[in-house]
Length: 185
Image (cartoon, rainbow, N blue to C red; front, side, top):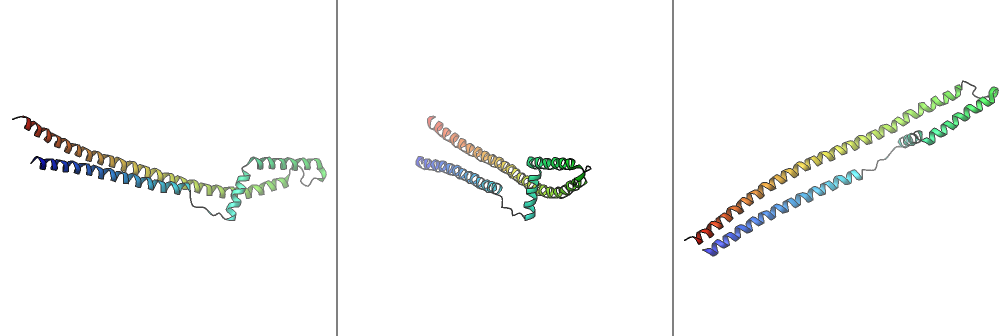
């Protein structure tokens, strides 16, 4: 009878340990899956698809880059000063005398062409920023969901471990009672 009881006890402990091992394996698999999913999202964000730009878009970017640089400002300032100085020095033979009407026309034309081109470039960059913001939102949402899932998994694990501990405690209590009965006549 004692060997049967010992065999039963051994089987019971093996069953509890096997259940714990299965739970740990499930948790390891869940973590591995989550890590794999996170890698895929990271790869998509770090390596976005290559965009193809039209000739107009490339020109708009170059104009916006040059138009917003110190090189442009310095060059344009030198041209303006040179234009004004030449026309003042030539006085009566100037190709654009003092109110510099031709200079105003040239400046207006440059501004009229440059402004929409820069706006096109800014609109495309704004679209890229919007896509980045959407990606950030999706990543944050996924992180929030993952944190919630982890909380649920931890709660489940704690409940299962608590039940296992109660079973082990019950078993130990039974063993202690059996030992106590053997000692007392």
